[in-house]
Length: 77
Image (cartoon, rainbow, N blue to C red):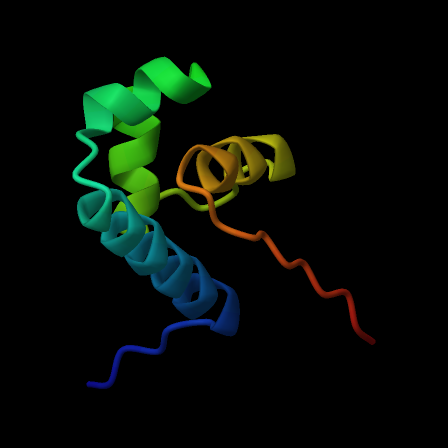
């Protein structure tokens, strides 16, 4: 039995991986990112693990800014 992963789920997992890599490269703890953003450590952890199904743009923007990343959102039809 094959497990299908939706495109959106894969994109969120990739985003979470990028956030985790950037955080670790800066040697920031999850607690430090929590203090910098006001976003709970649970949410940050879930996002990094691809478990946050519907993060808001504001959440993504705050984390990206804290990690000095550019957040690029594309909308296509």
